[in-house]
Image (cartoon, rainbow, N blue to C red):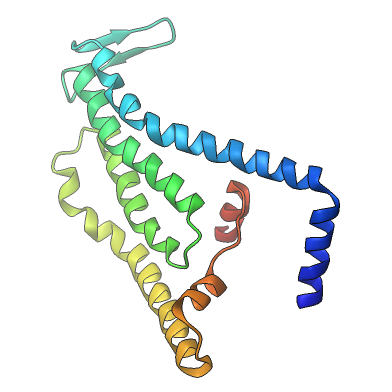
Length: 184
């Protein structure tokens, strides 16, 4: 194992341009994510530029707000669910900790709320949402507990530190489609 690590370091030292390309690619991706996160307050307040009237006509579409009686309020309600959902997706797909699957619970909750906001004909929509999250939580919470129990078992048997175990359980970086393929 150590020989492979030394060989990979030698290869990296021999080809500095390949390493530079990887650094530039990661820097570009990180800059895009950071720019998106920094722009979320501006994205949220875009609803203020939408007319406060029951109907909104653009050259692409016409939106009629029936439930909210005001297009600006409807877009505000959608933004209240969509922006945190997008931030949770960024956190989920960039997190390298062993517990990142726990983020699926609030992601599911915000998706459920977003669909309820868009389909606003239902009254008291947010009242019973926890019932719909129970099956997902029944899968995620025990699996996280089992991973944590395995980590503590390893600590007691192998005398490893928590940092070493977290490194061992840390997920290697994958793209969006790599993470999605783990679930389907």
